[in-house]
Length: 369
Image (cartoon, rainbow, N blue to C red):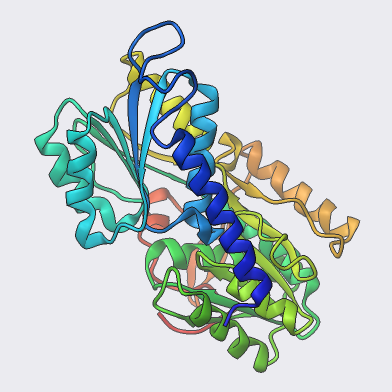
């Protein structure tokens, strides 16, 4: 169960976003008439959310991006639909197109096929699908190289563990999640070669109780740092309640477990949304598969907690600089798998195809796919 304080936080957060939706859910800047400040017609932009901004995670990060878009481009009006299941995505996408939205962002992997299907019926609408791989003339995909931020957060975790056991609460065994676990583990073991990362699968994206229970299971076997690929801060709270440390995900989770969260690997969708909408508006947009690096600002680390030493911050800054300058990337060999087989040769850099198809664990991960 979640602590009462967290329930109150979620209620308040949800009320705040509800208020924003009532005032501006279909409105960007300017008036409420659907016209821009100069009297022209606004461009309608739709967003389809898997969850609610109150999750304090994945959807919350996208909602922050939508708000940033409205702040930066007064000539847009936005419409959002929350808590959309994969099965209902095609209906929702169709309705957004029928409502006159000229740009539609589908923000969950499970919306991929529905996006392709609906886009075929509305060739004059531009569709952007988050984390997928299917494109068309009027469909593009977008994601970020979160593995880079994951690696840096792994350095922090590796330096923090005293038991040499780091726990990782993971959603589903798909390449995106596996790639993140591997990058995190490479960071952990760069900082502490004796440490291992134990993985527990929950088969959930958003289930605070289940995700918190999984973290407690890891804590019970000696893990003293908890990381996650989940949409809720349940694992962070479990760590704090046990007096242990943690690494958040999606957004800065320090407010929800301030004594535990050392940093979080975070998304920053706003600049991408602004750039993409501007490109569609000025006629320069073309279909592509965007996978933005940390240097684009789409992924990064949240501020460090007070428990992170200057020595660790310096280590992170050193590696971050190499990544930002393009001098080094996370999956640079030598890299071995769990069985000790060399998967990436010394000096070789894994290409995007191999990273996007990753279905094996690196050495140091305890768990199975």
